[in-house]
Image (cartoon, rainbow, N blue to C red):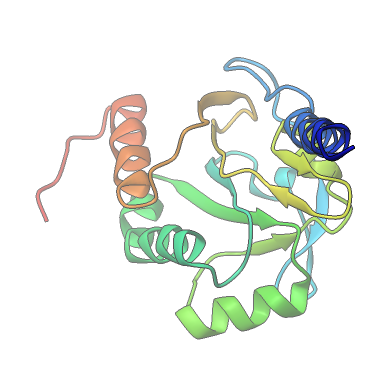
Length: 182
């Protein structure tokens, strides 16, 4: 009887893991980036097209105020001037509420919009939704979107310790901007 229960438990966990892994496919370089309309940390509705004509660093992250997500956001904050200097806007997205985003952005003085994707539809359209049934989170994915609205690069394996620097290097290469020493 214990073996049957153990097998059933393993099967249930495997099903949940599978369900969490299937969320659609991320858009590929060259494809038009899916647009969206989501509230930011101040409740202002934002869409991807609001930033058209500029490079966009659209990053998805799992949860406000957790160690990896805080590290990633703070590196984007610290490198914000360099990113702006390259003509890029930074936009964060998670499934947390606008009020959670407001606390997070205020606590760490984040100078960029953080959007609330409560339904998970935007994360799903970017292949970034992890849905485990009762728990849904965004995967840590980043998309570099060119001024024409096409995916220029996708980062599907992010190291939060150096991710913003990698994005800056990629933007410098794509915009042919010489690398500046700090």
